[in-house]
Picture 1 (cartoon, one colour):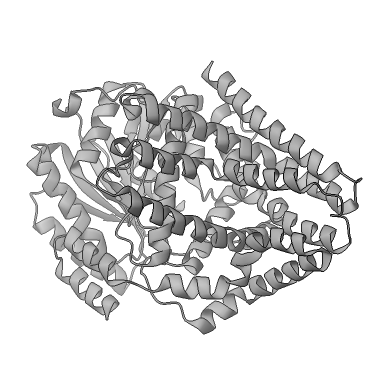
Picture 2 (spheres, rainbow, N blue to C red):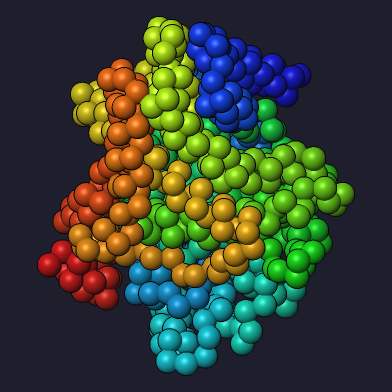
Length: 558
């Protein structure tokens, strides 16, 4: 029944937007550009419907349920925070050429928190390294040995593979096959993941309360922003993810997604069902998480999402270039899903999640095409006779549908700050930050759309993309570097705006908000990349003043 209700809501939004687009574009007859505009918009409309319906149900739960998280997570029992822990958990962090001075302190904090809660004997930290042999590996081993020496025997373990077969997924499966004896669960962390003892214990108790659950994970917030880009992106992402995950957990129920980290895994079913195949083109699966979730669904195991990010964080990219570089890696992984969508050993909803992840990038060319098509239509006189009222309504409702998860998160923050975690922030300060983030999104989205389009054309024509290391540290991007990276975006924005104004002043003004980010892409990248003192100081305090981290922070601030 939940899925029927959700499907009906998504279909209503989709058909309503498509009908309004028809009214706007059909007025005065159809030009070639208007026909193409309608096709591109209609193909994107189901994406709007999916997001809007998920947000509506998520917001309703978060506003009206007494405990929104417990409403969608059966294993979360009220009053169960003091229940004894019977299982043993390996806290596994996957590393490859990482900064050990930044990686170790949050793990130290987690072990101390678990010890303070009286559960130190139920957990052990396991560092799973894929660092290639050499000086970096030797330094890594020394840091791991020093970390282990500060804790009881067996509390900290280190294993480095000589050959990194299967990348991260292969690293994890190698540990499960050869080194996981005595453990029931695996808490999977990335090198930039940080979780508190309270958040970890909550996941363990949820898993113990539902024996049929193979994987449970919370949503993930960004931590200790070191730049304005990180700060603004993390603010919008956190509010949107909370509502999105609540609505998704409601209608997907036990067939939830897997995001690859900050997740608790039941070792036995994962080891049995989640071995990844070699793809038809001979490549290795890069984005492993959705495939693993789909295999667990097919085997009858539950995959749960806890729509609560308290105590669960990772690092967002520190500047625009780092974000787009990460998108290249993710797009390459999601593009592979086209080879798996008809696999019979994957659950139906899991395959839908993979299809949805693929569309996140595959629809970008059709979404971006709306801009040049609208500009060409205006420049050739095709926009004459377009009813302005319905056009403005279409633009507003399209924007609202596309961004409804985040806007619903903002509504929750204002209407029910206790559940949104914003009770200590004044409403005026919240509104100002929301306004800044919405301006950020307005400028950011067309830049990302251009890059996604270029990525998809590259992948569709056979270009292979690697899985390079992610840039994690904040730095000030220089003007020359930004110009080299974004001059095509700037020229594209200028050309589109010129075509719009060539048609009419109204057409140019309608196009202006959509292309403003392209025109300002260079200063947008440079100005938002600059590290700021407050975030780096908070990072140092949060991890107990680790000397190496303090040193890095001082260099960053200076």
